[in-house]
Image 1 (tube, one colour):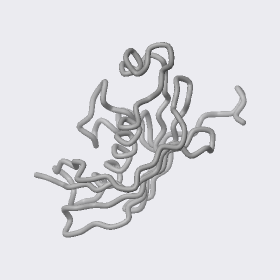
Image 2 (cartoon, helix red, strand yellow):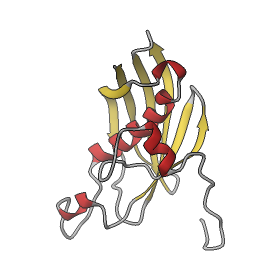
Image 3 (cartoon, helix red, strand yellow):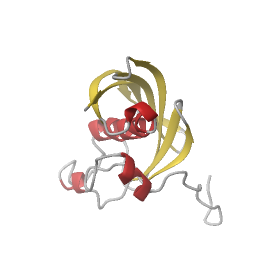
Image 4 (cartoon, one colour):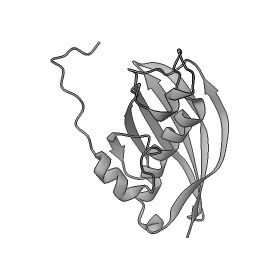
Length: 153
């Protein structure tokens, strides 16, 4: 268990760096930093979940839970970091093409810190990518599944 004296992970990519790679902006940029990254293999992102998130106003009053689709979107944004760092993907837009085998294991609530891992499984014709995503809080699995991306001009 982390203590107040533990230092936070050193970001590999800051939120400013992420804005150079991804088109997302507030309130839809759902990753605060990338804390681990191996080019063309995987990235690990971090999302600090706070009560100030706009979706908590309606999901659900009195019992705030992060919507599952936004957890998957956060995973996809980490996957986008992997794809958008490839030379042939520069100046393209990575969009969702599909999600499979997604399962939610526990709710994400204010105060949680999501650790998001997206691992590249395959790229076809430099247009379609498939990744395995996994989200955890305190080492506990929150969500996992496969994501497909299409790169468009």
